[in-house]
Image (cartoon, rainbow, N blue to C red; front, side, top):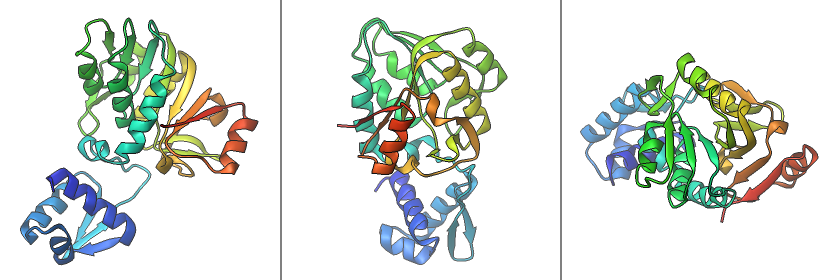
Length: 254
């Protein structure tokens, strides 16, 4: 098990149990206790957990954001399905906003095969993905880089985005709830997403099942502003009715 996979496994265990000991983790992961202590120290420095005597507890707040390597393997299959469905909504010649989420990275990997797209993103990683296709024009919006997400944020990022307009924005989030709407764990990321929404003709939310009925720290937008929701599994009847009543289309990943 790679280090990033082991830390994701530890995080998942803490989500289920709330707390766990170093000894138990050493046995479950089949590595020494010193390796587990190093994993816990790293996760603690990233703000994901709190170390306690002999173990760890989950630090789960509305501000919690997993680092990119861990997010890439979280709900990876669901994100891949979402990305394939999102790609069917694209036409050659489209101008597209992509935020810096790992779901958007999956979407980017599907869009590399297109011709004559214009991609506008605040993600250094997504910009690199499109470097494989010289026929796709990439505009990477600069600003202050967030180390754990590898995205550019801040007022300069928002100001630059306001110079551009797009046919479609693929919007991701940390939570979507019928009462509180679409929310994010980080205020600056939410500002960037709002700027993209304001300058896009079609607004598409790409969110896996873990994001539904969840509220994060700061509001991005109300749900009725969306044109479509793309998710990985069939929604409940209540969610389907809610989206239908608010004139929001929905699609499921393949």
